[in-house]
Image 1 (cartoon, rainbow, N blue to C red):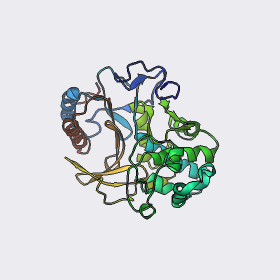
Image 2 (image 1 turned 180 degrees about the horizontal axis):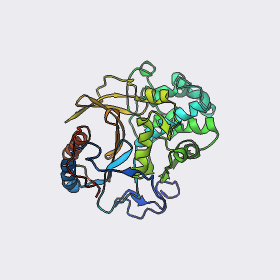
Image 3 (image 1 turned 30 degrees about the vertical axis):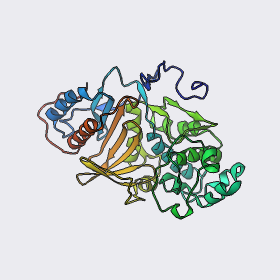
Length: 358
């Protein structure tokens, strides 16, 4: 039944517990490469780090881009640059980018546009009426006032069945994947194209990347999870935000949308955590804001340890892909992440020109 409902690519073999990845038949985005030393990073320490993370059991792909060039690229446990992984909630940040493009194209008026007029078929009952205040911005910033748990929902379920607290709409942060299921449906209705088709035409093709697979849920492509990307292609999406929306000198995504996406709409929340070397300090338009030793790290993050990290001050993008359905060793994995952040945010004149690829 999963196949019928497009849960997984048809090429992914059973059992599903073995892997959540598959090999794509196309060439992922082709980056220029350089050595860490040429990028003013510590070559020796990075090469030692690449040996250490052989023990990172769930790690499958690590790519670091600095100044537009790959300085670190490592795959393990059979993964390659052609391996497309389920990036889960990283999808939310992609949906956020598509929302900005839909506003540029005139399909949506602004982030302040109301949600419910797009769903006349669901405007019935008290639950739907309570959602009349909901805007696109509320959904993007996880301030929709939803009171239920963060589970698998489709747009119809969110609008008809999920409860909201009117007093919390626009006021309180609560992570809720259903918000982006509704956003995807809005994008499809506004553009009169599927979210996937809209993404391919307006985002993926201009970036020179492809989505390996995108799950469909009750007629709409999932806006909050279940997309598959290679590490190189996902890094290219991150570069769009690092360059404030420019692609090859052309303003693909309005710079003001990047600024709005990286703005902090929730400065305090009981849901935010301090994790060893970094702290969760806010949430933008579907981007997490982290503080690492005074540096702001903008993060698209997915279940099971999928990361797209953007560090503007160092002009760095990092992608981490993990096998989400294997047992997690959070303490050990977070230590590896912290060491990586330290290595890529500390400039040092290298003494060797060996490429740190493996």
